[in-house]
Image 1: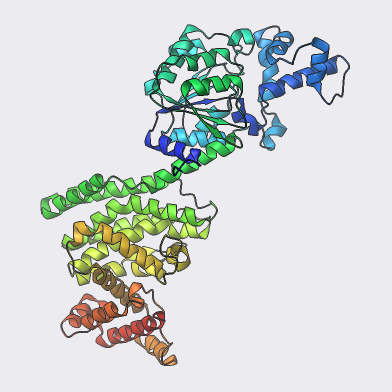
Image 2: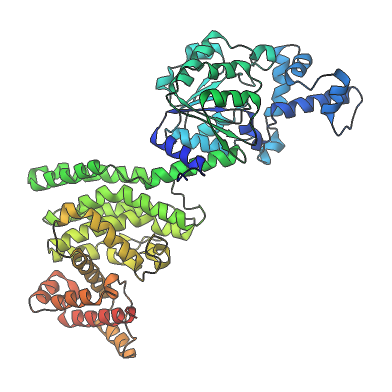
Length: 594
C-alpha cells in the first residue's frame, strides 16, 4: 500500500505547499454552512414555508411534500425566487434577510466567518492560494481576508472585471460568479445561470486552464454555466481535488471523471480547510532553510570579519539578519495560547532551529575568529532576542518558556566558537553578560537566564518529547550537542571528538553559574552530607558522561590550565573557590550517574 494512500488530505497539503499559488479554490454554499447561512435548498424550503403560511398553512412536517402535492413539481429555488421577487432588487432583498446577521446573531457568533473562512484567509495571506471562485453571495470570505490584512480584488460583475487589476498582480482575486447580495445584479435563477457573459467565460477559461482546482461546498448540480466552464477546460497541467460529504451527484461525477479529479471525503468545510491549514503550516514550520543560503551568510560573515575596515558592514549585516529573524518569528504563528501537545512542541522546536540556524552559525564564526571587539554586538543580539520573546505576557507556560530558544541557540553557537579558539576571558564575559529578567526590570547573568536547566525552557520533561530523547536525563543538552554537531563544521572545523568541545562549554558554564554563591555557602552545602550535599547548578550531558567529564576537569585543574581560567575570571579569580566549585560539580555529577 502507498504511504499516503489513506490520507489524501496530507497528500493535498504537500501539493499545495510545494506548488505555492498553483491551485485555485472553488467554493459554494457548503463553505458557509457552519455560519448558519442556509444553503440554497434550505432557503427554498423556508420560502415554501413562508408561502404556505401566507396561504394559511402554519405547521407541516414536510413542506417539500406539501409543495409537490400542490404544484406537481419538486420545490425549485429558482422558480420560487423568480415568483416571489418580481425584480432583481426584490430578489436581493429576499436574500439579504438570510445572509446579513442581525444584532442578536452577531452577539451569538452566527452568520460570521467560520473556521473554514479563517483557514482559507491564512492560506491566502501566506501565498498558497491567490484565486477563489465562489457561487456564494455572502461576504464572509472578504471579512476573513481583511482580518488577516489581505485586501482582495473582488469581481462581482462584468463592470468590476473590466476595471480590475490584472489577475497576475492581485494578492487575492475573488470571483463572485453570482454577484454580491448587496448588489441588485445577482444571478440566481435557472435562466440566469444557464450561461455567463462572455467576459466571465473568458476569465474562467483562463483560471481553469492555468491552475489546479480544489472544490469544496459546491454540488456541481445547479450552475450549468460553471459546470460547462470546467468541462471545456483543455489543460490537465495540475490536478483537481473535490472535497465532498457523502456521494457526489451526477453533475459532479461527470466533472470528476472528465477531469480525473481526486475526491476527498470530509466531515464538513471547517474540518477540511482547518486540517489543510494545519498540515501546510506544519510543513512550513519544519522545512529547513536552503543550506546554500545559510552557507552564503556564514561565508559573508567570514569575509567581513577578516578585514578590520569592514567592521561597520559586519555590524549592519548582523543587525539586518537579527531583525529578519525577529520578523520571521513574529509571523510564524507561534501563539502562546495554543493547547499543549508533544507534536506541537516538536514542530515549534524544529521551526525555532530552522529560523535561528543562520544567526547561530554566524555567531559561531565570530566566536571562533573574532578579536573581542564583536562581544558587544553578540550580547546586544542575545538581549534583543530575549526582549522579543518576553513581549508575550500570557499563555501556556511551555510556549512562553521556549520563546527565547533562538537566544539560547545564538549564545551556544558563539560560546562553542569561543571554546574552540580558547578565548576564555571572552567566554566568561558571555556567561556574565547582564540580561533583563522575564517579568521585571532587574537583570541576571546570561548563564542564569539561558543556560541549560537554568533557562525556563530547559525543563527536561519538555525536551524528552523530541524523537529519540524520551529516556534521556539531559534531553536539552543532548539535543544541542547533536544539533551543533551538524551546524558547527563551518566554524569548529575538524575535531577528533566534538563531544569534548560541547562538554567543555557546558562544564565551564556550570562553574560560572556557581559564581552566584559565596565560598562559605558552597562549603556549607558540601558539608551537609557526605555524598548528597551540593549547591544546585545547571548540568549537561557530562553529568552522566563520566570518562569525558573527568578528562575535562583534570585538564581544567592542571597547573597549566587552572591559572588561565582564574585569570579569565572563572572561580571569581580565586583558586580555592574554583576548587570548591569543581568539587561541587563532581558531587552532583556523581549523583546523576545513577
